[in-house]
Length: 330
Length: 191
Picture (cartoon, rainbow over the protein chains, first blue to last red):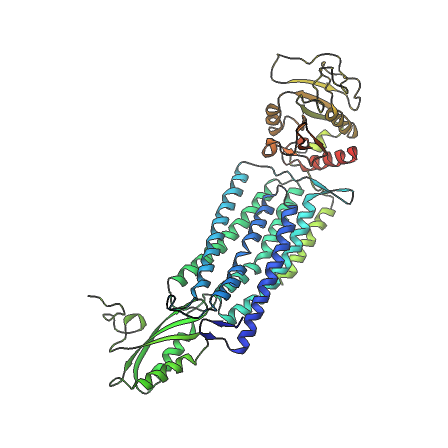
């Protein structure tokens, strides 16, 4: 697999980062497989364990979406897909987010009903090496065991997500990082049953369900706004991406440019830029336009697809006069 | 920092357990009440596992016929661990599971108060906390699993159709100390 995003060739150091991210996602899948199996085997009648298991199952989606998307966005643009395949990342992100929301809501209702009806969860024993052992001990051991690896993976992945500007990877890392709360919640819930507090299990499950729903909502918000072509933001949606300013500054600095402003949308990992430029006196020769375009593309690897539009006046959306808009109003 | 917290939390729970708390314990204190007291056992007729005092089963000890027609259920009490001499009101349940219940009660110095009836009635009483356990040749895939805490299967047999049947008893939901104690008893008894 050559590391590219559509026609965008990655710089060498980022290619290494991408390979590392792919490796880490495979590791995540392996860790999850073990975790899901262990939790399933010890699940019993605990609602908190059930919630934790469902969360683990859902955690398969973001790494899978990432691994699939990395392959799909590799394809160069074609006649049928003139913008390339970058949006595959966003589609994967949205699907994973909707799944999270749905399961979170289901678990919230399921656990809430259990709590309201006063269901006392029965947790029996298993025979281990000829001894009768309370299943709750095994549950707590499994949760303590599966709590740590995702946190470590999450912390590494969050750095890679920043370098690669990949929001699916970021969302995934963010969820992994918070995974320990699920584990601790479950342990407390099961321990609660252990000391005779029947409601502790359902309460822990409610807490986990709320955290799943919160993750889902946050991700859905991010995925939907990206598919709506909001202005490009930093990888954590914290602030407008600084590249927008840099493109505008570069264009404004050219001798033939009177003023400039761009619409930049995030295609998943790379940006699609529409740069509006107002020439000083008259249109410069084509060579000057080409040179300006190449100059922008050289600013950052994320910019590859840039359309430059010479206009008489800047549209309102990119800082021009109010009456002049990029969509022509009749 | 967060990782340390996880380790800390994971260590904390077993430590708490060491401080005299019995884990698991019963929200309604079933095991404590039964020990040295009375085990209220529901029994529904299902030979050879349970026979509600008809006197025809191989392990039945009660010579008198079961009280019938006086209601959906009938009760009788017998003293702890006798097995052979019913001291109650004429019901002397037999069958392998009745014997197991007697032995379990004897181990906890408890008298057995038998309540015989249909499964659904008994399970409803179990849910309301009027019974501590129910026997009646129940199997693992019993429809009562949402209403009663079924023990881990203590015995596997094949029925006439050759299907596997995994035999369980039913305890009250969430009474986990009692449930685990019963499971431990059954696994040691059957071994």
